[in-house]
Amino acid sequence: MYYSLSTFLLCMSFLSFAEPIKLQSYSGDTSLPHKLLIEALNKANLDYIHPYESDKDISNARILNDVKIGQLDVMWSMTSQSLEQDYQAVYIPLFRGLLGMRLAIVTQKNKELFKHVSSIADLKRFRAGQGKTWPDTTILKENGLNVVTTLKYPNLFPMLEGGRFDYFPRGVNEPWDEIANYHDLNLTVDPYILLKYTAPLYFFVAKENTQLAQKLTQSLNKMIKDGSFNRMFFDDSQVQMVLQKANLKQRLIIPLSNPNLSSITPLSRTELWFDPLNERTTTQ
Image (cartoon, rainbow, N blue to C red; front, side, top):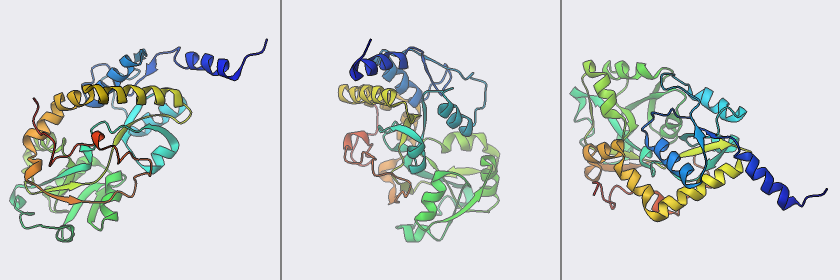
């Protein structure tokens, strides 16, 4: 018996989703990417499971490998050209580019450090602290900023307090919880500047899993069109906290270029990106 190519591909599409979609997160995850993923899968009528347990500390390297070998079907990560070469990205920025907006953690005694900074040239006089292998480190260095690095994330906080560097750029959703976790170090959030570069966080699937990527893309675009994506964005507790605490409109924006950005980045789709100067910054 002979089958047409279209019949074969149709059969394969059903086989591809015969098993539940295996997610990076655990069932109790309340993060925005997880909530968006569940909504997108529900819209696509796809079942899912959570292979990881909530009490496990899973490294990024393991997640990447698990997607590659099929132990996971979907993960999310800040993108880079190399990541997009090795995996299939779903080109919808999950935090609407918010994670490319960086606030600086400084010591209490240096709270006024950036009061008179008016350009990137002024910022180059100071030293930033970052993880040695972080994508952000490359971005800062490529823009001519001085960067002090360490392999271990927890070391950055005592290094800042000890004067090894002057400021610690963090995603706008990160500094307050981190400062609370290291409350004995007398750290605070700089009130004056906002570093801004395009750094989307995407869903990623295995390179050959184009059907799942297409399903997720279709579902997320439906959510953008019907408004549910933005509602979930503004209803997210982390996003609400950022918009309440960060005073984005009052900050000097210092734009940085991102050398890790691929040419496929959907920059022309303005509805995908949060604009801190022109878009509402409170929930309704």
